Length: 169
Image (cartoon, rainbow, N blue to C red; front, side):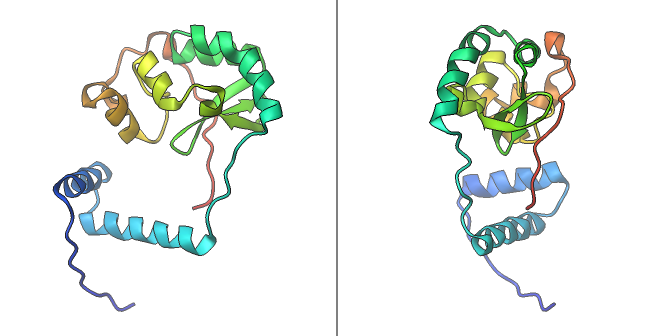
């Protein structure tokens, strides 16, 4: 495959973020940029993703059923235990969280569709969802001093994540 040299001008903050990402992944900046461009080209080629929104007839009853649990839980462990008692589980889904039936694993809706976005829950609990792959979100939402890798006081949140949603690239 013939390779071409390309010069790209990036605004300072974007450049710094890209360099930080490359360091975090232990890759070159060029590789990070090539992978990002390749991912965008795949998205274009495969067409826009259809929204994965839940049916409003399902959301209303779920919101009512889970409102107290979502509002009163004091940590990820407590929230997950409360949901599991009702037959549900939270799992990573893209950059956020989704609600699944438990134990059969049927995806029901995004956490944000229940009125509790991942960022909101992260701020409230002071830490990211255990095992969530998007560490950059924790750094953005909570600040670098509270990122997933730097928190060691797990307390009641020391629990195993059942499963992470994955899909083809």
